[in-house]
Image 1: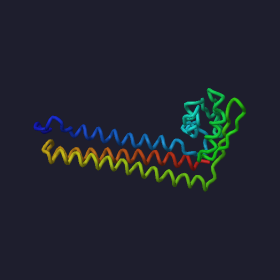
Image 2: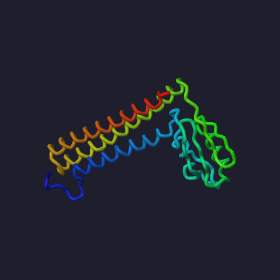
Image 3: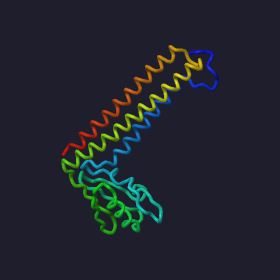
Image 4: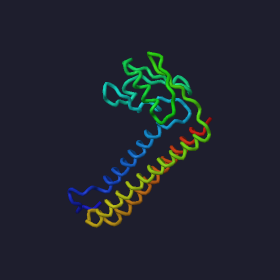
Length: 195
């Protein structure tokens, strides 16, 4: 390490840690986003983030009810306040999930029919776009970190060798994150195509 680094300049390790953290955030966002994609299997994540009107405020269903999936083809929603039954039902009907809830006065049953092969392929394509967007986000983080490392070298806060070493570590971190995205993508496609 250079001993003449200015006090406010980040170290290469700080830049690398920040880049890795930002790449992790992009992957977590992707995973949360794709949890709500319907794969033909009933899971609470299909409906828990849908917004329902709760006393005038849009509220995620997961904050208004207990949601369970007793089997692969049924979601059960038990609202804590029975007054919200109709609003939850409306929110599910308005969503793009294509689900048809039934309300029995105390809870809502949401049957999850199997997906057609055509719909599976359509969903796989749309998920592919989100996967690619996440990879672009990871590469943008890499580019930003590369620029920060080059700036540190230009300002003589790090040596050329330190920059090269940090760039190598940064590329490995990027490759690891892209591989993680690819593994997640493969598992999601396998789950989607399983009938």
